[in-house]
Image 1: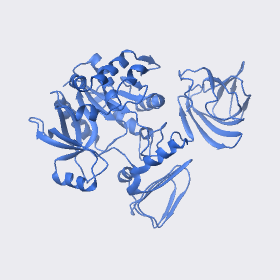
Image 2 (image 1 turned 90 degrees about the horizontal axis):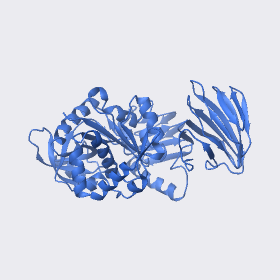
Image 3 (image 1 turned 135 degrees about the horizontal axis):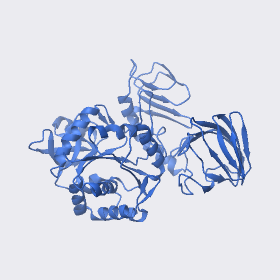
Image 4 (image 1 turned 120 degrees about the horizontal axis):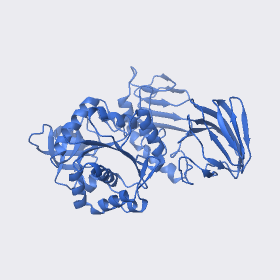
Length: 480
């Protein structure tokens, strides 16, 4: 069998599972419950493993998420073939084109398995077996995708209507038509017909066949992807695509660019416990329930409550006499929604974005390549943060024009530079940094370093950071 290359698309913006999922920390990185052993991305990275004969994965993500992706790969024990950084969002067709071109360098006859980073597969062995079956179909030149046998007349998915059966490939069919997300009556008709499948968004593509068809149907995408890859450069293990070339690619999904136009599309029907986890209702369906049908994560007391999804990060959530609700409580935002309206959360995110609020973009906990900081309290001229620095983590050499900082070590040992002074600061010791003083923080130890930072000044925004040296090669404007 030809070599099979997993391709993981990790460019999601996190709108449908707000407020837990945010633009800077979307759902593929989140563990939604204590029963979830790994993030969705980690599970996807390990889904087609090297010890089962699959090639190392190619991951495509945006610049803001690059260190999160790298951390998940390291925690998962997976070394990607490449982590490709998109300079700008251009939907799935250009991203897959770049991955195919990258795979073609080593193996023009290889097979790609293109997977979103944030789906759930309950039956992993069945999925692996289905991939091998689909790869045999793709090796004949068919552009193959998985169709999910519908369990209900779902209105949140696009559908695929199967055509003629493919000889020699059990459960595989030519694609007769793609349909958009239907209304309830139409979806019921699809379910009754027995010839429609949910579109999983998982594609199995021969490298040569896909690039040939893309060049025929959308030559501008292939040209832009080729030039973007040719002008790419390595940066700390990431592959940065050429920004100008990639920006010339039309922003279009692979469904519209290729799959709905080609005569080579095939669908393989699978039943592997798939979910795209596209709403809070999907999470309620996946989660374990109490006798009253409630799915609860966090601290909650329920009275006369049924069929609710309740998630609390810190606070106690109490309910009386309610049913069919989604309640998601985070330190800076609370969502209460009817479960039947859970897919409309994106409308709230759009309003937050339009009003230039920050809650759609970032949590109070902000992740950085060196660890994270979390805002604990803030007022007109002060802000209190927890800094968590990973072993070996090192903040940039920096200074602030408008604020002074007071650091108190609560766990571990800090290596601190303030001006020309270098020193170790241990637990219950502190450092004071005056505005405009150059300073740096590092964790030289083997355990996490935690500090309380008190900022005082006339302006406390993250963009009041001037960097002189940064081991992570971050741009000057990367302060979100």
